[in-house]
Image 1 (cartoon, rainbow, N blue to C red):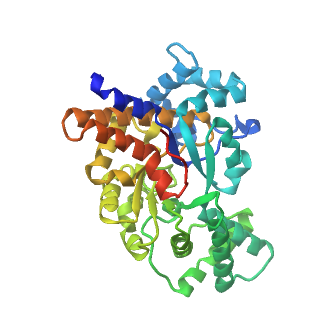
Image 2: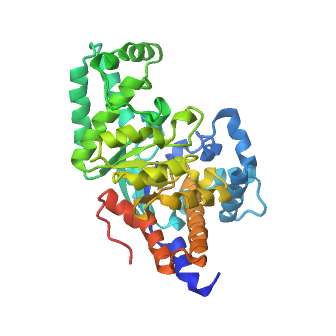
Image 3: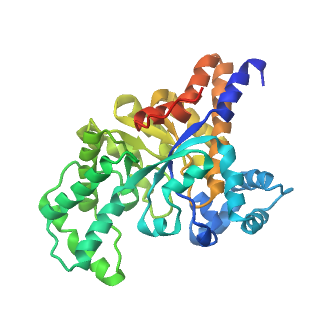
Length: 395
């Protein structure tokens, strides 16, 4: 590394970051309840193969190094972490990350029951804020209606749901909302619907509730309806709305997970800030284009760490920088359950930024001061501004 790139190295690996999209860690009593392979999002039998991917091999090496293991296997890593006191494990993988603030997605109720409260994470020297998941709130409300045996009324539902989202929007600790409509019915979100279309979905929800005693909202007219309600409220209170885009687990329909499907809804709500999560992988170029042509669209580059190989991560970042304005790019880990996910998300993203921006400087495409500023912006400044966090910028 050339001496004149030392400033870039310092910024890439030491500048504090705002994790604009992440999840809570497991409570200690549940630390062994989730499969550690879910670090890579895979589920069931497919999860057993993830350590054999290049990204799995890389994660094994990086985690083993922190755990002082020599040439470890994935099973070696699992054994070492499971035997370590939980506080020690969390500190070992959380404290080195230089995260100044975390914006924690509440997740579904079943997730919240096993996870720490968002405020718990301040023990790692960071501030903490909430991102409210709108599908979870709608499911809670519908469950309350069905449990009481009440007849569903659309006007009454709209009023109550609106009031709940409004109540969250005025809380200073709630800095945004999130939708997983991508998982449920796809990103081709309709800009309008008739009352009849929305009401036609209720019998299926009621049938599922009577059978299972719980709900998972997955009917397009209704899902799109609650998204539109939230988008309007978010614009009123200047709170961004995050959307899962691109990769995820097997319950996603990949063909409708490109943010390109969102163009009509983005145009219909020009005053709402849309955050496209997870690098929109493998549709990163689609997302970059949307950030270029729409003032209200921003791109998060998370979750590809550690799911994608190092080569793939650098390729995604290069695609992101092809057209996306650098003042509209936000960093996240999309960490969940395990402290190791925060560590891998942090170290791998910093490594990738350092390499890609160093290449651009060496090629004479941007200057060294510009590269350093890009790192400061994507790691901290952009999220601080877009979410109105009011945090003091690092020196």
